[in-house]
Length: 198
Image 1: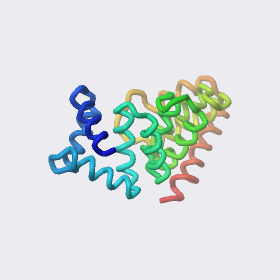
Image 2: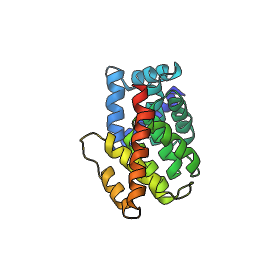
Image 3: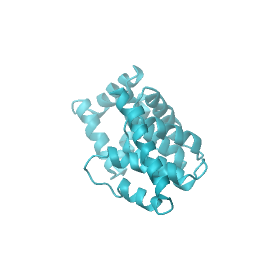
Image 4: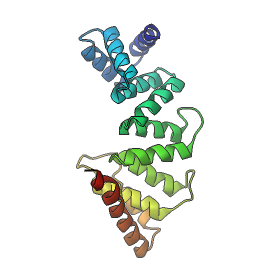
């Protein structure tokens, strides 16, 4: 399997100009001290030992190589080992149908798990899920709550669209008491989930 992975990755890298391929190649070269095969061997060894970052890396690599089934299995393993970014990638795959059929229930579950680790993108996706009613009853107050949590916890770096912009869009459909309630729920979630674990 390692030889197949090396061959597929080599073909993919040579035919691709994606940022992922370049950063993957750089990572594999660094880990393998200049040798891609040794890099893959090293990461595979750590993945087999249950290292969540190695599992996440290989899961992404398999996905980029067009093997969503193996990617899903590796991302699930990394997620079960509490890798929040793997959880977000897995959830995004389910939400967008990139790992097979769209599965909003699984997407919501893994976004919620990732959010518990402070993943801002997962919080924004949860806001979108509730705003659009994707696999759940449409709930603008809950949507606003998730956007507010993301706004409160987000670092200073700018994204394409800021959490407060999402919240403002939803707020136009809420009463002031619903906004106040959502803000209280957001602060309670932060205190119950994030702060208690610090």
